Image (cartoon, rainbow, N blue to C red; front, top):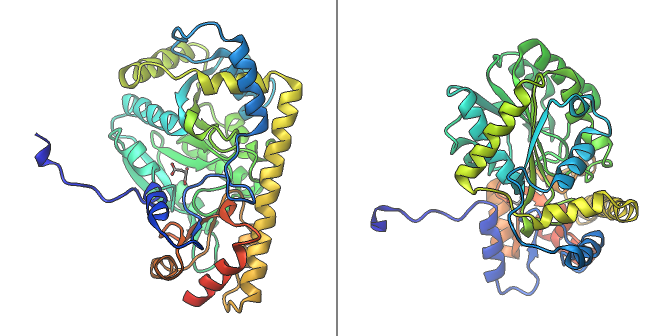
Length: 396
Ligand code: LMR
């Protein structure tokens, strides 16, 4: 039976990890998959998570199924984190939500929900967007289209073109927006630009679909939620896929939340029933563990503060690494001005070099990053930054 299937090329992002592992060069550098790393190149367990694990181990008394919606305290805590305390949509009972296996799980079940609402809906994604958005949304049977976003030549957002395109998107279509720390470019909308996009969403009536995977890695947890909260305030319906992989460091536990802000309290239970039925038909119900940890952290003031401090430390370190890379590139003779890297936010930067240059630096110097020129800033450290800069300069 399986002989009919062709072997597929490795995933453009995850495939880099396997290639990196197989490389025997002791000086290899991994700037591929978006995983936070410390100065030693390790991804330690976030301390607040470690403390929550100890508590959970002591307090959990059963492994029976949780409810299809997920861990209740996880959902409440996450809604407050994403939408702010006392958000009117939550208070009014207009928000449906379900815990999902990772941000990816949330993206997929939301895409399935959209398909149920409108078979012909088109989902508009930024050009470029995270590579996995395409199969996650497209495999649900939805058509994808792109809106202009990033100009590699100027290393900046093509905001006028983006807005012009969004003004043509009709009611019934969906626009996917990155809440903060745009993946792959690191180029984020300003608050004024979010305002303009929200006005277009209001005028046109398209549905904002927000992917929030890096909350806290841009400016801070509150500022990074600005655009998402503005959308919820501006239009009657918004959907959000949130991930706890990066900011809680819960990558392998697959912790995410699908949020649907609905127009009124009559629609909310309908949407809640639909999304739960979709999940039931794919994986039945979410795993408990990671959501239970986030619940503990978000409801204990000391643990929450510990976690906020850790998010701040990760963000500040990545900001410092940007400056270090820019300095080292200039000091090692780069003719190209890379100072734009300092203005980008979060875990990723687009170096705005060609795929040929990316492959050349991989082949000649064992530096691994995505062909689009996206680098994981957290993979840089004080020891590898100079060899990295020299390697990059050698292929420019
Ligand atoms: C990334 O963009 O590198 C991460 O979100 C990991 C992934 O699944 O692609």
